[in-house]
Length: 192
Image 1 (cartoon, rainbow, N blue to C red):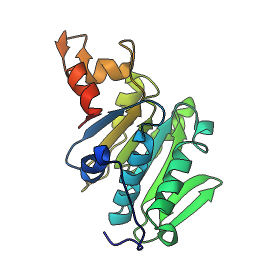
Image 2: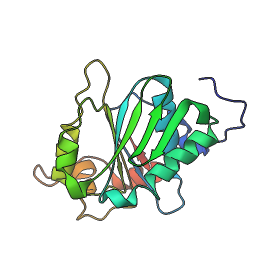
Image 3: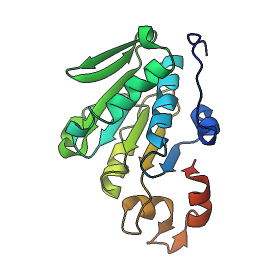
């Protein structure tokens, strides 16, 4: 990928993750300051720059996007030196790649009906692992863009055993089986 001559330095822990698009689902866990959200923003901006994608970014409430996911994506664009290739709007919140019409759509789970009407989504990013397992399943049903590989990315803080993230990625209560070893996961901090 050709970018402006800007010295881009990424946390080594995330290098493989940023360029990896082989998997359907990704989950990143880390506390405040772990740079999971920023590196996910880098990953998404690079993908949007490389090929046309409709990317749905989810928070529990829509109002929290402006100061979190939206800011991370704006900063990632600047960090990569790609400002001239992206149109950034505050009202409504939207980021669009001028080269290929990739678009970032921001929604909250506080109005799920607005999510159901969005067509041709190919990537979903769920920030802070918000929502419920039912929300997660409903969101995955939105991935319907023909001809492209869909992806779901969940970023969150360390999860409790009561969280839908735990029940989806670590332990299946219905079948009483381990999906992912917790110790191994927390050592890697990324599942793909």
